[in-house]
Image (cartoon, rainbow, N blue to C red):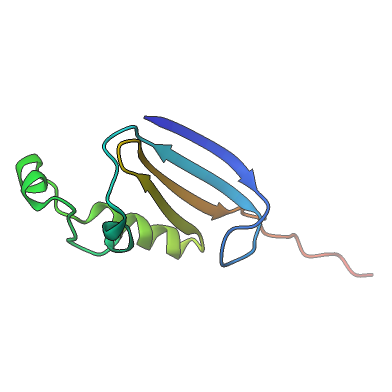
Amino acid sequence: MTLSAQPVERIPESGQRGIAISITDHGPGIPPEHLPRLTERFYRVDAARSRKLGGTGLGLAIVKHIVSRHRGHLDIRSILGKGTTVTISLPIYQGLREPEDHP
């Protein structure tokens, strides 16, 4: 598994500057027909394996919700036989500005 982070000039959809955090595994990958549904609650690519290992199908749905609440973007890409990369892009917090003194 590989974890990386890098600044980005434009987050997809919002266009804001931010940071992209990517997690890549080198597992079997996910078939393309499953990718659009991975963030649905209780969706499982392999239900039998998920039940055996104790998965609920909520993990990526929760991640998507948290990222969305922070005005970010979630991207999932996978290549069969090579692995999967999940990238979370979040805007950079600009902080609160102090009120300017006016004479």
